[in-house]
Amino acid sequence: MPEKIYSKLDSSTRILRFSLPLPMLAYPAYLWYRSPGKDGSHFNPYSSLFSPGERKAVVISTACWTFMFGLLVYLSFVFGPITMFKLYGVPYLIFVMWLDFVTYLHHHGDDEHKLPWYRGKEWNYLRGGLTTVDRDYGIFNNIHHDIGTHVIHHLFPQIPHYHLVEATKAAKPVLGKYYREPNKSGPIPVHLIKNLVKSIGEDHFVSDTGEIVYYETDPQLKKFLATKFEKYF
Image (cartoon, rainbow, N blue to C red; front, top):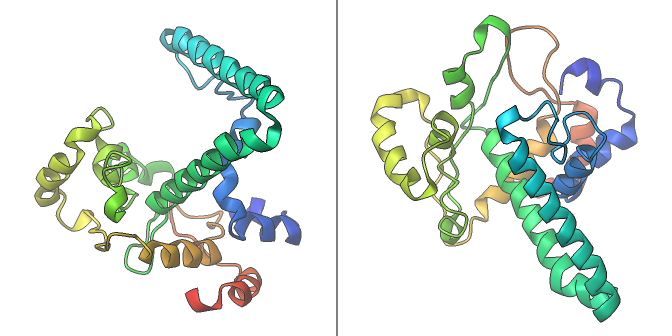
């Protein structure tokens, strides 16, 4: 977020945007923002996001999504909304929070790996692709198809998930200092919680000027968040 946009946010919006766990529920809000009738909708086959050759796939996807939504509404009447919330809503919320957790960590650095943003002449595909960091999720690596090997996924998105680890090993000697080695995890990646909380508490906006910029901190917001998550700061 550029500083000029951040400076226009009122204090309550800033707090909500950067206070856990609310940022971890961003995916449903994102889909709503991209709902039919909105610019850049994921549900509209004529959206600017898609090429003409992708329209058929978008129609099929939207039809399946609509059918599933209708099925969930119907089942809520049959079994009751509370039961459906337990059976579907709770797992969905866990999935959403994990999805946002993983996505955020891949595109925000930490004390060891500061990730720049490039603009104008300083940006190119390779630089943009390298502006990510791999993460080790312990026992969850295989569950979500080794997406923790995110650098190689950025550079070569056509590589299937079952070759990501192999491709990453092959790419490391080539990338050299441009590859950011992830911190090793135990079975449960508890160390990433600190990375997440600290990053959300400090990575608030980027400068409006410059073609290579890094996240900057709103000191007042950081002070407020630090009172809630003191042990992570």
